[in-house]
Length: 235
Image (cartoon, rainbow, N blue to C red):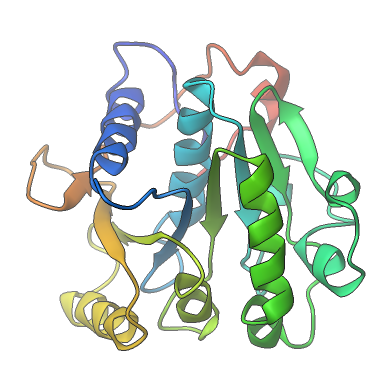
């Protein structure tokens, strides 16, 4: 769900806080391309990725959300966008960017997954993927990549080696602590730059070093994103 822009919304304020934390989390390195993943399915990584991307676009940054979950893509469904051409087609057929990037709102652009390929890991880990990201960095101020869960496939680990930073989403009561630790160890193996963790659906409002806490709200209503009101995320 794309969060409320109301100043009274805890969700909106949490994303502003997350956005600010990311901006100041690295002095020496520009965190222009970020990947968002989780340990297991159902932790809300796609929602966090989409809301973070939109929050970045609110600042006037030209922002691109990429659905790189080539196993079970959801962005096109939740935003009711066409998925005829997306990341897969862009890489395989070397399309011009305008052919497979959709622009549903000012400064908020979306690259859906496209057709599910037979070899997702090879595709996202390819030199062609690296080349595409290099192209996109010349066009966009911020790129947010939604990746599959770490303990399911190798795709997010491959993507983490191509980005400036990785965010791990953990839904309270969903993933076990052992699974979260395993995810961190996997990311460490590939020397991923894990810049923080989003604790999703938290029942307590706590702040800690290098962790971002996100308070989930039911029935969040959009106030500024009117053109996509009917396309809000449900989870």
